[in-house]
Length: 149
Image (cartoon, rainbow, N blue to C red; front, side, top):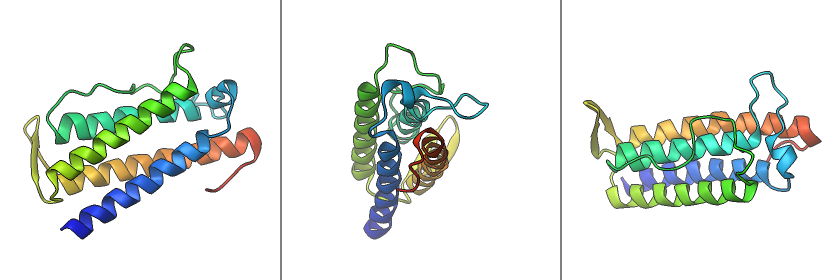
């Protein structure tokens, strides 16, 4: 079971790192630049994934309160890229600590009368992060031509 959990955490960490690489080196303006009709930006994706981390790990898995990020992909002008990056990293560290404290991918989790296990929550986070990291990759390529990891 530890090997499975380690593999899930490693996969999620790799995706998180890939997302932050897409943010690296961008100006405040470019991080907020939208190149798609939906208005999505790399900064908005980081803000949203901070919310995803907090929601699924702090709230659902740990039974606490979702306290980080925003579901919205629209970033307030007063929020800096540095602050977004730091909050995302903090959320990821908190998520990993929660996963380590639970320690069993099959651990049952009850949230709002729905049954989950830690494995399912990890897979939800992996899927959501992979999806949005792909969006970030496309947006970054449209901004300055940088593609891939």
